[in-house]
Length: 147
Image 1 (cartoon, one colour):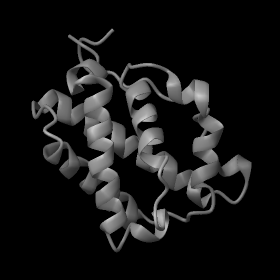
Image 2 (tube, one colour):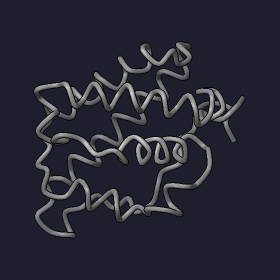
Image 3 (cartoon, rainbow, N blue to C red):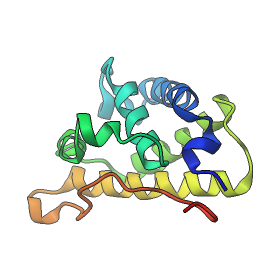
Image 4 (cartoon, rainbow, N blue to C red):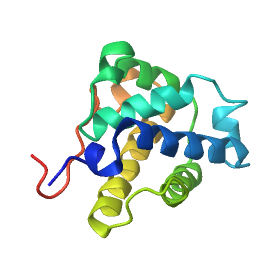
């Protein structure tokens, strides 16, 4: 079985997904306060992170590093309602981006986004470094048969 990165269609497909997703969060009244007016580089950063997580190139780690991810979430005070909406919009963006719709792929993506949004929420509410999630590197997300 291929990696999630390959199954998704590679960098171009993941970029399309992240672009559609990012547009949806910027338009969402519940999530807009977390993202403000948006940043031009955000889609590229999301693409690099997701691609690396799914088994693609390690560009996010090389160019930004995981400490960047921790820093951008600090003090956002993400609520559970916002976290759930983030997951909902991400899963909807999969359809809009014409991503594969097979159940194993979608289940792997959902578990990835659920986990990542939990980490982001914890880090966004951490008042000290001791309260941060222990994750310090881009997780490699796999699915059944992916070595």
